[in-house]
Image (tube, rainbow, N blue to C red; front, side, top):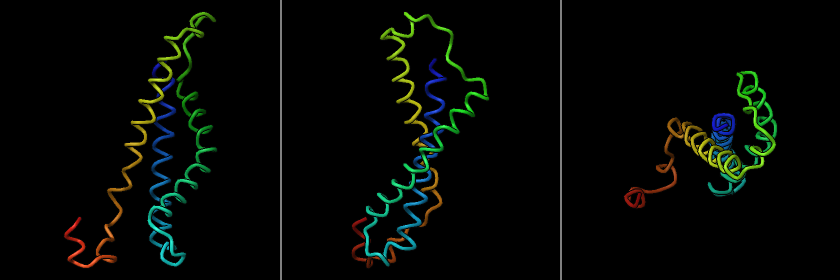
Length: 127
């Protein structure tokens, strides 16, 4: 039950954060200055793109998990309705999305620091 609940969220977290970071950086780097938007506004637009992509990615990830054999264990109606099962699903989902989001931050390792383009040496000393 734990794996069935967490694995799809790992995949979704990877896709969500990865797309958001890549799209936000692309917007910031290529059209942010032209549009006169801040880096946070570019991040917000990247999040919008990521959320839109996530609508389709979620179904795909669930299908892949099903093909890999991840299925809910056989449980009685009483077991399915239990608070222990509900808690297990919730905790597994939180762990899965957390792990996925951390892995989805890997694109940050490949994004170059552009502070030197925007700040003078005196201002860079603050960072």
